[in-house]
Length: 340
Image 1 (tube, rainbow, N blue to C red):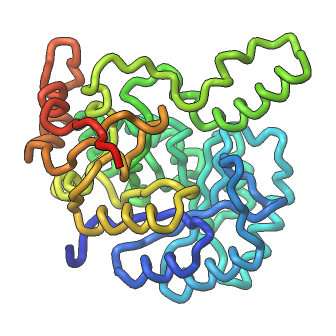
Image 2 (image 1 turned 180 degrees about the vertical axis):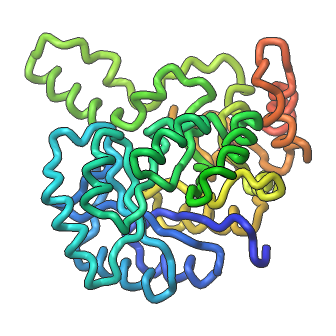
């Protein structure tokens, strides 16, 4: 699609060549990244290589040359134990490479501190801050925030999105971003712990070995423990398909679309970026939006969705008990995996 209204915010997965390719498409407005070893205060993935300080500087310089926004992740839910002065020194040290344009936060308690420390850097909410209404946005603006990645529940809630769009008339500096391919389930009971699950699982294994008197058995289960009851639960997950973006553009519900994940290998991340830039994807939708439960025993034919899918699911008020719409979509789109 030429000149899309909604451009993409993409993760740095430690592949500068991929970032150069993505920037050259013209559909990227922001790249987000974690700090290097010793200065990484993001919500971390286990067993992934951290970029070096030199790589981060190269990335920032590349983005600066091409006028791409640079977003540093500081998205732990709690930063109480982090050295905020060290974070400040690291951010200032990046200025000679072009500097960062925004910081993503999940802990609201450090917003006033960072607002005072960095008056010219935008403060952006993580999905983990659970911003899901115009009221929360209004309060966050009072504290100094201007950029918001909404809670994923908003992806399927036209009333919330309409209210936020209306509220922005009085908050002209505010920008809205939606996360397209989060793996959580609609109204997931465990959603508040997904961010920390990998780290907690590692800690649980250590506690078990040490014989600590803590209940850790549940935490040893890998992936989300949402109790799926039918394939329709996979259709109800609040992801955005590439084909859905045009509908969001028409309604003026967002300024940008965020693509996950930083841990993806370059082939997979390129597939995701290409699909959302093209506003179309032929294949297994769960390649783009994998479940937090891990690999599933079936695939989802993205081209089997009805054309009115996103219009219907953003206006259905999530009356899932009495509605069988998603079940009918699942019947058409979800198919068993074939043996290789």
